[in-house]
Length: 318
Length: 235
Image 1: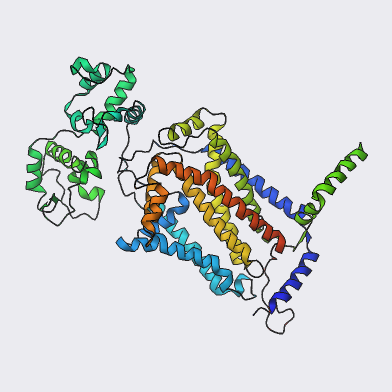
Image 2: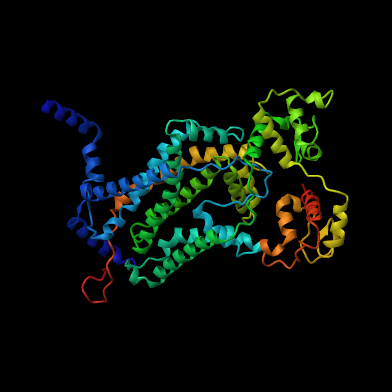
């Protein structure tokens, strides 16, 4: 097996002597390629830049996580392995590929180097490239898991202010924050925007003996904070909503153990979907999910009833 | 003047051996590659070049970046909006990361299809595979640093995937996140990995990789193997 090693060394020495000097012949090519690459890189950096999305929000479970594009094929491959098999695709398989690559020279020890003389490994390599390319393209085309929620810029600014002013020292939103003030997601829904604005200007004017300090905010900042708080609040629903659910939905859907088995359990639906998504879904499920077996309720229920039902459902699990 | 220059050169040569270093690194002969094949041999040095770009832009970014959840996002916004050429430097670093991955993979494919990992260059290849892993590690840890939605949720998915490793998964996930949940300690850990640990590892490995490349000489373009008894058995 190893008898070709010495022959190889002899032949390599010959080739080396016949060859040219590394400098300047190869160095020139290297520099030219580096120069062109930097030109392309600078063009991309200048034209596109590094886009920054809105601030990380650990409570926003409707966000569609997307990996960097070169991990997309792995992300896509994961979808083919359901449930407990996911760990196979996520860890075991890539681990095995890397181990195989690492030990490749110890397995493939023959003297043949030309790709056409090694049809098995060449074929494997071409297959791998094709597979990764196909998965990446498929990953780009596949629909997002969650609906894209268009964010109101005022709400985003309000969220930033909420953080900057350290409101969470005293207030809780979705279980996170202090205990001095009221839990905002529970109480804000009942108040009008005008009330909130007056409250931000001077808390004790609308709530006598309030322990909250006057914050001395600008009008824009008050508008933004109000918009943010309105966006996180559970909008009030009537007592009709649970009855509507029992009459129309409970045949197929469960809430806290009560209801049918045909459709998914909706006990925590509010943590995954927002109200506008639920409204759209109730009105006509096929538009959002073509595979859904659920009937459309537009026409069956009034718009007001659907809104009421959606407010009720979006409050579940929050 | 000329004589003084020569004297300075001689002084340096005696003390550093720079002429021999030059001979070993640059004046060495390499097997000739013809036509387009010759350009495939530039992929390795191109990767090294982009690595230098990443190191320089990375150092510049680190001057204004704050690795804490309270300030990370605002400091990146500050870089993008206020720092002189900040958005350009951030852009270079951002796209440079993609370039790195693409070039490393292309470089590896070149070596794979040419069978250049064979005797006597097995070690060079193995160090190269580890380098690919380190580059992926750079990409993964760097992705979190801007602390925007994309960063947070992609890292959440990534650490959850790591957590699914049989047996050691939960422990790995806990070490990566610095606890049960993603937060301040996750960000500082990823930052330390990205700017301290991985650069040290990558420099060491690049050193070994380059040493081996020069030591064994760059591989020659492969030729078709000939049938037994027909001239050179090696091809």
